[in-house]
Length: 158
Ligand code: PNS
Picture: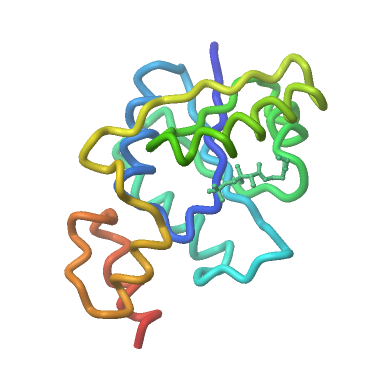
């Protein structure tokens, strides 16, 4: 059984993230979405809120689970007894940072590999930051985030 970890901040989960999760779930037997508890950043949504939104968003995908993690990604991956990390690549601008992360992770944990999926074209512009910016100005978010996230974002912006 091949298990893969899809890590991220997910502040909040976008339709771009969901697209990567759904496509990964048809490639791997099980996908664990790992939500980073990054103590050096102040996210808009708490860790619990981010995990809950993701759980709601992926409830139609039976082989996907959502967990939080702290510390190094490679330690979480090993703890889950796997060696596959999934990341989405939107554009060339993502490439440098993603390569750096994948390669440094391989130095620390040589058996952990990162599999990149190209983001679907319709989500190539999309990021959690863009979503938060639009939410501030009351833009309709239906093309950006899963339905269950819209009201949560609107509440935060009040
Ligand atoms: O959604 P993001 O913020 O682009 O995700 C970044 C993430 C969570 C994949 C990355 O910051 C990470 O793996 N953090 C855990 C700490 C770690 O392992 N750092 C070493 C990688 S350079």
